[in-house]
Length: 104
Image 1 (cartoon, one colour):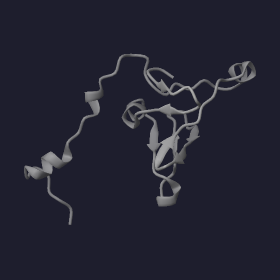
Image 2 (spheres, helix red, strand yellow; image 1 turned 90 degrees about the horizontal axis):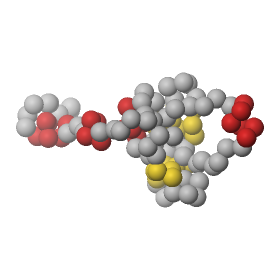
Image 3 (tube, helix red, strand yellow; image 1 turned 90 degrees about the vertical axis):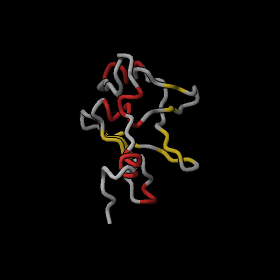
C-alpha cells in the first residue's frame, strides 16, 4: 500500500477520501447501523472491516511467500504524493450562504 500508516500491530490508519480517490467504494458504517462494513475495491474484491469502540479497522498482517506468489496484488492508494485538500468539500458553508437549499 502506498502512502499508508501502519501501527505495527495489525491495524491501519486509512483515509476514506484517499481510497475513494483511487476509485474504491468505501463503506465504513457498522453493520449494526445498516452499513456494509467493508471496502469494495476497483477490482471488485471486498475487504471486510472490523469495528472496535466505534472505529473501523482493516486488519492486516505480513504476507507469506506462498500468498505473494499465488494471490492477486491490489493497489489501494496512489504512489504519487497526494493533496489532502483535493477532496475538501464544505457543503454546510454553501447551505449557510443560501447557495444550496436545505432538504425538507
